[in-house]
Length: 367
Ligand SMILES: [Zn+2]
Image 1 (cartoon, rainbow, N blue to C red):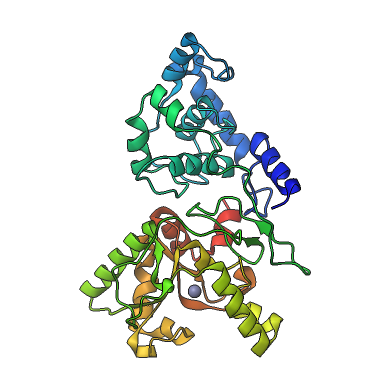
Image 2 (cartoon, rainbow, N blue to C red; image 1 turned 180 degrees about the vertical axis):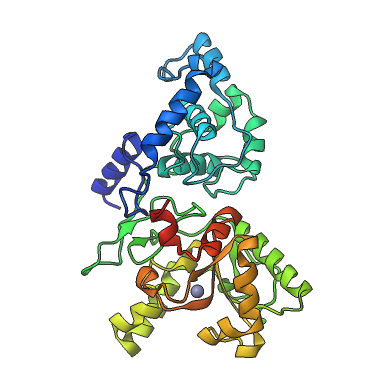
């Protein structure tokens, strides 16, 4: 870790106009912004709570605490990255009152995701996923302003700790993902995870594996493990027997694997089917490769044609998973078709992606 990086990261954190956009490449992705801002400004102008402003929330004092208490309103709906509207404005106002640097523009952007993730990391028994969900809302609503101010320190968990990207050293520009906890983090050949990122909530899902050993690759983050268990249970009901083959993979394991593939096939070829270290979704703990006995538990494209592969394609989104590298999208994902590679993104996003035959890249660049 060098000081320049710390300084840059701190500057990003403290500058409201800069979003933590390490994992978006399209600066126009929020081009509905103007319309939305008009709409939300109109809406909030008639809102009685609008008179409570929190610009001076750095001041101390009883009177200000009163204002703060009134300004703390937790929206009753679930919100996540890319959502827009009045509820997002309300959430952002509350975040600002708590001391977070986010814009009040009604767009659940990277900065908002980051603030929610930072809060989740400081709450007990709440998963850090970057989505403003029922679990988070419940925990926050149980706390009054004093408890919130005591417990939540803005930027405490997701602040200026960044490590340098180690891959993409040659022709490719690789951005560093600054919020790897985000369940919607885009990890690909242009956006790498920090090499020291290890998910904090890894568990072994209670599903079928084609081996007995307790390999680390059995693990997933809790949010994805719960979803995978539900997916497997539903498959069982339908007479579909799935096997989980490979989930979480540590950075160091990916170094080993990629080097081995590169030695055998050359770096360029290896990069088409294996990820360079830091660029593997498996490091997020949100990804599981699944397979079936009918393809001898291998990870092969034929799996997509089996009843198990077909069932997965049909039902994965119901449980928040997407087929991350679909057929025909190789030029976008830069990976070959992988019908076995499931990535957890949550049900809302998964439905949109699978129903519209999108990739995660397209999901973030369109709309
Ligand atoms: Zn995979």
